Image (cartoon, rainbow, N blue to C red; front, side, top):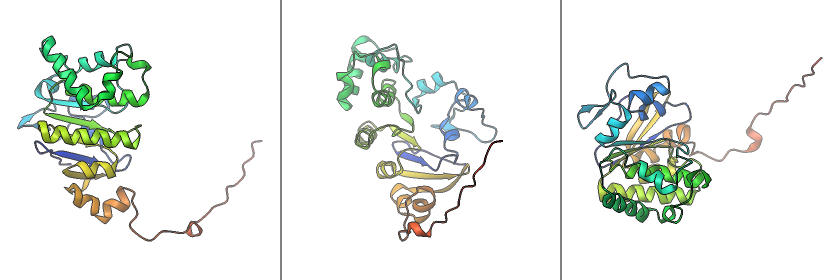
Length: 244
């Protein structure tokens, strides 16, 4: 498997469940081994430097931040304190941290309204939203997004990708979005990879990948043929089984 994320671009890593999207998104040995995996052949490089042997904190200091899927937050801390944990590896003063917080709130004002609420008592959607913006506090040059649309309303997903596009254009932050909503991801991405059984079966400009019939029908689940009738589907009678 050979993948690349050009600097200053948005790349979508797509495929069905079990296609092998998770391993490429793990950039450190700690993350890989947590999934019972390891890099045995080849290398993972960032700006010409091998990084698959670095620890997660070393990666963050280098400018690569991974946003894990799910609601990974510190439930006993407030929303704002959760955001501040993103700047843990930086030696920034209070004034700089305050400016960084206002920058994040500027992108997503809803977080500012809930800044003093305990993260554990916020809704699942709010906890999901907190993840990518916490990554911004580390001043990354590249963000790895895992399932950014999972569990969120379509309107919020569009809002998040609008912000991703804005960060990419204004601040030149590179993004790698894994397993995202395919229609939305390919609309905002510059490049797309389609994976199947641990292999890249298609890659190219996002618009071209979205138009390709193979990706639309067999991988992205969008039918391009005629609409099938329910009568054409075979039905099988379920055998009754009795316990003695």
